[in-house]
Image: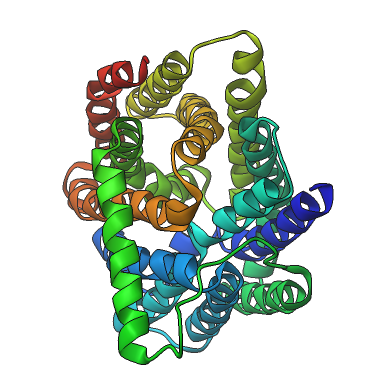
Amino acid sequence: MKKTIRIYLLLLLGLNFSVGLTFGTYVLFLKANGLDLFGISMVNFFFMFTIVFLEIPTGALADTFSRKTSFLLCCLFYVVGGLYYYAFRGFWNFVLAEVLLGIGSSFLSGAFDAWLIDSLNYQGFRGDLRKIFGSKQWSIRLIQIPATLLGTYLATFDLSHVWLAKSVGVAVVGILAIFLMKEEYPRPRPAGKLSLFAGAKTIVATAREGIRYGFYHREIFTLITLTSVLMLCCQPLNMFWSPLFEGMLGGIEKMGLIMSAINVAILGGILLGGKILPRCRCREHRCLALGLAITAGGMVLAGMWPTFWPTLVFFLLHEAGRGMIGPLNEAAMHRSVTADKRATVISFGSMANKLGATAGLFLFGVAGNQLGIQTAWLIAGLILAAVIPLTQRLKK
């Protein structure tokens, strides 16, 4: 079990280090190539839309055949998408690159976590999933600190160099996964020789059952609804923080430091939501409500200040709230779903989240262009605050 967890964290950290190289300069790269706030949002819109379209089929494919194959396909598309960003310019080329990255992301979501949980269950794991997912979130944020600093340093030479470095890093992770990932747990095997039509029929049936499970399971549906609204509301902060702070500071040199501060804030939230509150016997629905309230409050207050330091402090407060929500939500989701539908249901949740994010990109792309970045943040915070009472549905 310890070996399985170590392999999971090693591959996860390698993937997130490689992807994290772009986080501090992604929006600035698009802006430097002539895109305004709406154009930047639309490029990311195609990424999210691709995931929405493919999330369920790829999750069902992982449940039906192999979670390892799904992870390797994720790495392949990440490498190709990063190389395309490095080599080509222009709005539609950026869209194509995002579609490739979206395909890769859809192969990752659900499948990799399902591989971990089913491997641990097969090996007799009886521990607390919140600790594992808290460690996951903690490790991701720690590794992204040096990743964003390195990415920002590379960007001072050429913003496109970051994409090349990302592709090389992901390729190394994919090679490691070929040798390290094992699927020892029982997997469904179609009887007889599998034709293309029979395989597609099996995937469709698995997807249908997973979607039905996600819709009619009260706890899962409530969790998915809350996280989808969260994703919708966080888009103007995800996409616009770097141009806002670049304008306040007058350059990209400090973006790596700000991204590092963001990761530290999220780590604080993960520590609070994954370890401190559970030890205080805070009930799960109250923990989630507190995380959502901190996030919404930080968004509203960050949208009200015209100067750098107060805006940054409240922006980091909202990031801490988001960090709280992560391990609580993941543990509750995995605890509530059966093994045979795990990847599909998690993919269904991820699809719904990306659908919320897609709507947020369009809505707040327009709002950011017309009303200003901080006004968009203020509106988003008020929308998120309105759904906090839904946490009462998780009371039992």
